[in-house]
Image (cartoon, rainbow, N blue to C red):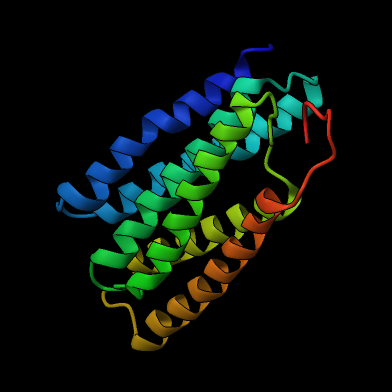
Length: 186
């Protein structure tokens, strides 16, 4: 049972290349619907691995690092599709802001890890991930099932992700706050 949450995280990481293939390369009929299905399964593994890890009290250092990394890779892959593929073509700064924040935080986590500190995702970071995934799922669902995504929906998606990018930046501030000495886990 202890390995199931980590196995779900690994599964999520393995689903990312399939998602990218379906969104960017396999341009056959219904490829976005299939990409959406893969994304939803991967997003569900995020919920499930966290739930099981807490329920069974099997939080691991691997999970604390790999789980948020898997989330970042999944979200950035989907945001790349929404940014560079029609119909959405989100404002490029949205992707840049979110990607830079994720890279900086990943590097900081590694630096902290080298110093003996493990920083698991906090509640604000979990909300950020939830809102990113919710927006991605809604955008892909409309993309998959509407013959043409209306301009007001595209504008609403840009506004949504601008707000999510702001929350993404704000949630990263926790990594720059001074921490009390001798804490091995924040």
